[in-house]
Length: 320
Image (cartoon, rainbow, N blue to C red; front, side):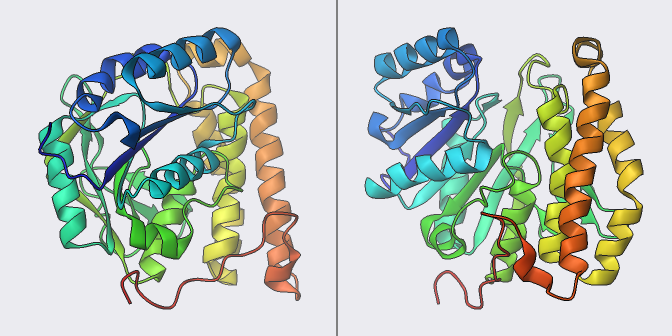
């Protein structure tokens, strides 16, 4: 049927816009066994749910349809559990707005099979050919994620985008998948860092290309939830991964980071939500500061709330 390996499984997290699944997944999906594609439809509305379910039924894909929005990480974890039960050991996490062809997927699967301790991402372009993601690092002084052609994902503090990543099941199982307490934003950076702590590393294959084309509909930061999550999770990440001095530095730069997040939404998002975005930035920053201050207390890492316990870094490799 296809040159794609039998052990490949694809998980796509959808939140509305079933037309993106139609545009970007159908062609690739028909080049591999249908049961190895799992769409997790985070609930966004009845009409979107019905359209997504109908598309998955037509194409023979498995659809997981929770009655609420699980968040990105929890939805990916649910999809991966389904794929693992079906024998998949090469796992492609794919945003519905990203289009990737069979040859690009084959290159990523071959790289992952040959080097199972790395998470691989393609270079992701916009439809006009300009760069959307070509590598990521974290500015450890100011607490900002950087993603540009000059950002080396394989360098210290590197990360790869959850929009399109290939990971071996051995590494996935060892680190435990995505940390579900993030819900949105910083979860792919956290996963990349935990994989590095387990002896692996993230890497971008610049010779492998994918295209992200959503017409601006999925613009990050265009809703209060995105703004809240970005501001909160930056400090959640710092509290879990950094020392006290770096954490204090990130706290000092929090107002500037929140201002940058508020500048990122498109005009439609600002007009639609207005002052709610500012309130979300304040609430998210306050929630993150509260968590960080608990981490700075003498009791340290045991002060997380329910579901927010610090995850200890792994001490051996995925194949060790």
